[in-house]
Amino acid sequence: MYVPAHFAADEATLTELLAAPVAADLITVTADGLLATMLPLAYEPAAGTRGALYGHVARNNDQWRTPVLGESLAIVRGPDAYVSPSWYAAKAEHGRVVPTWNYITAHVYGTLVVHDDPAWVEDLVRRLTAKHEAARLASPGQQHPWSVDDAPRRFVEGQLRAIVGVELQITRIEAKAKLSQNRPAADIPGVIAGLAARGDHASAAAVARANARRPAPHR
Image 1: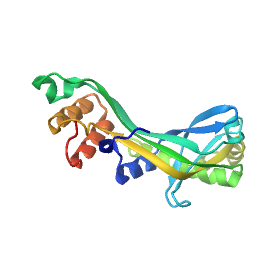
Image 2: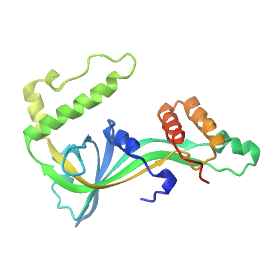
Image 3: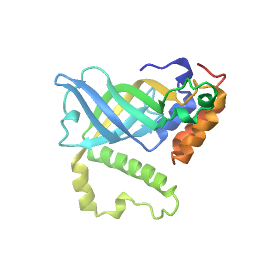
Image 4: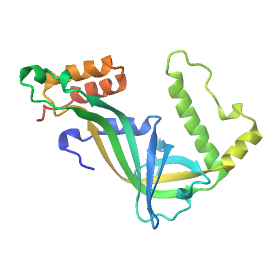
């Protein structure tokens, strides 16, 4: 990943990104070429030497049973947004501005381990459910989180047989937080206001956090 120094994600940003209830693209290199699946993942920082990402795929998905060549990759994304040059103070000053795209992403590399084990998969499903239901409850008006135990046991067991667990044992991470840190400080309030007015409060907050702690503007 191309990561200019001023867009390098700090540890706090990376931890927040991996801990958030998000889905990622799991990509493996095989003798048949690249295989990819989008799936929700749970991050466990204490696993192994560098942490691990846990998820599951459909049993009918050939990716889990196809031998992997070398490292596997999970692409994790945070908020991303189009940034209009109209939001910059520099537009009125000299007009030498262009559109861009802000985003947070991490390329998580590691060794893929398959867990074709109903007990392992059920534990993961319960963890993922608790994580995502907690995020849902953070929204106004949401109540009564769903639990795996709300469904009939025989139904749950049938669903578990239809999926296979996967674990990405992390070997290295490349992370980027491109959040207008290359713009003059005078342009930042306009970006935050523009994103917020569009309803993209997550991106607006990310820009505000990143630029509150930057050492100096970069051009």
